[in-house]
Length: 214
Image (cartoon, rainbow, N blue to C red; front, side):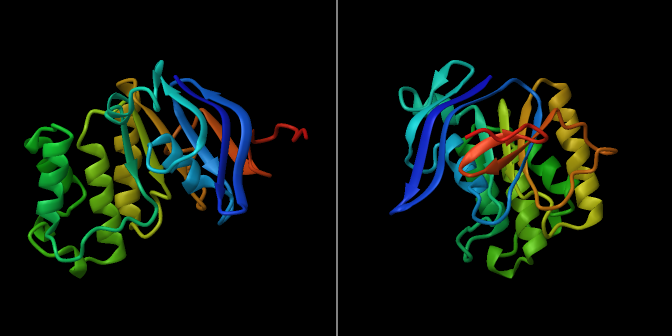
């Protein structure tokens, strides 16, 4: 389903990722790793938001050859979303609805689901970190994507919102959608059945419990 080959990423002289191949089928995957290990960089590569060396394919669609088609199949919620502080939450949501050709009713239902409707006419600059995170999750889920990439989705949101997020992920997964999650917090195995856990070690993606080979 998702295939990365010959991936090499540097920031200046600092090498962040360097691996030959990583392939995963449809499912829910959890990526572990400390700060600076390359988790967010990997997610930005897959979502087509940062330059890199190598090839990325999703369901046979190559990111370099068909970038628009590729990106239309992915939704990405960043760990620390940064939006213009002067716009209203509703304005941002309207932008995502228009660009992703989503249904407005679905966006409104998600705002209700995460209890954000009363704040959608407020400017984003007035939002707490938890509200900002929920807004980014709403934007990610409004489109009917094949792969949802959620970078640190559990930080700053309250326990009730975490429960709702778990339910939403399970509902989407039952429809055949896939997820890449990163989290410093433990993903509850009682709430979410993760197909495989990976960790970035020495610039490579390693299955948990697998022996690291050099």
